[in-house]
Length: 237
Image (tube, rainbow, N blue to C red):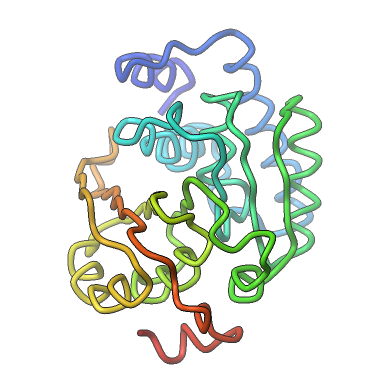
């Protein structure tokens, strides 16, 4: 996907990108490639691939959920900033928070935010299991989002403790999402959430399968969740 195609296709979804936003995406790509030479951020480094599989894929969440209706979100395991930094570029007023377990990635994200001139961003170096038990973060966020971090039965335990009651959990998935969701039915119930919507679409050009899963937090998550680091993955709910 060329930069021009990216601008056109995002525009067709109702997001007219300003020259400043286009420049932010250009700088994002440049920094991603530069930093990737000294640390592992992504296997995708060609411009067309980054614009399609990282930038467009990330902002696709905005086609199915209105981010202008919330004040803050947290991205769990964002890696090089996907999907929350591209979403932040589209919604500059949104308070975006990222928690990631690798401090070197946090260093990249801080440099990225400074270079792009992003205001209202915060980065936390922590494991999601530990972070979700901290009272200043537990059940404090309007929306929690994650892209390709873990299977839904595991991901739900990492994310839902951070969502405030009445808030939303958005999981971005590829093929097999519906099976994952079926496997996670018990976990969602235990953690206090219910599926609100499932959107399926194809990524342009390569036509790979994508799903946006939207869950509503209906009641508080029991205090014992998330369990200690490593447990959700070894013993999914």
